[in-house]
Length: 368
Ligand SMILES: *[C@@H]1O[C@H](CO)[C@@H](O)[C@H](O)[C@H]1NC(C)=O
Ligand SMILES: [Ca+2]
Ligand SMILES: [Ca+2]
Image (cartoon, rainbow, N blue to C red; front, side, top):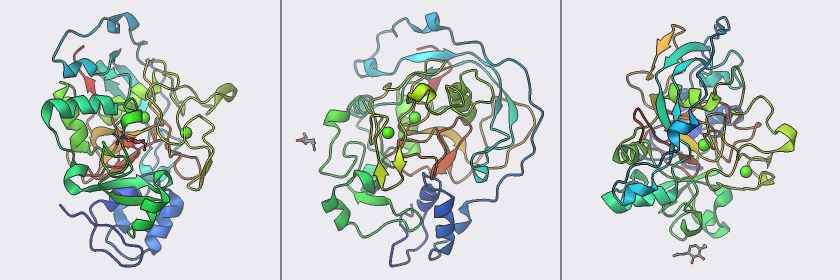
């Protein structure tokens, strides 16, 4: 697997992981910078904006509210390690408008809106935590891709000056991302860091396959993009966020995002400079926490910005591709750079990418 980076001074060879960066919390400004950057063969990863073909607003009702009572019984006893699995809620099937006719970032393929029907499913109420991932690794001996590759991308804002000074590689288009040797889910900022005080934060530095492996072990799977977005919207129609249209209703923060001047100053007004313990912010109407913000979440879909407007049932995305869709934005998202903490927003990474702001949660057809 090719795995090299654009060097700041030296031009690297081709890069399979750079798409990840272009699809990350970088923004339009960075993309134009990328176009002026030394060629790495990756400039064309951003396709032209999808043609916007607004369809008539549908008035059909969204799913019924999830049934709280159906989800409160404890799971059956299973293996010791599985006791740490997240609680799930029933997401009652229904119909919704996926995407938006008012895209915040048109190039991401947020448009056009399309009518989607989904069967019922269960979704984990929280992002998978480091503690949970540790149980999985303890039970299976699983080794993540970042551990095999020997490095992972870390946001420079969370690195020590000493470590930063040792790193000469960076991504020209998004210089705040540094490939850190030894960074992994156990060592989020490199070998000298650990997760001892962060076991209840989302697990980070997991690739798409790593996330899928965890979900399979739990007898669950990654959500499709449609399932994720439907769950994010929690029955609200045509709203930006899981809770409505106002980012901070009555001055209250509903998600772990970035306040201040990205990437230089994070005021931490919402209480967290980096990740937060899962469920630190209010749940949405379906009882799901951190659907936007905190960590980005992998979905099972391949990435495309071209969507059919045909009505669809349980869509699973394109049959193949080079990148996977991630949803929800992260603690690094600020409107100026990464206006992607909206339900319709989306971004992509190559499946072998891992980073200090990307995690996941699982779903299942069956109640567990
Ligand atoms: C984990 O990191 C903390 C803070 O950097 C440090 O104080 C602690 O000794 C580390 N623990 C282990 C087991 O390495
Ligand atoms: Ca924050
Ligand atoms: Ca999240």
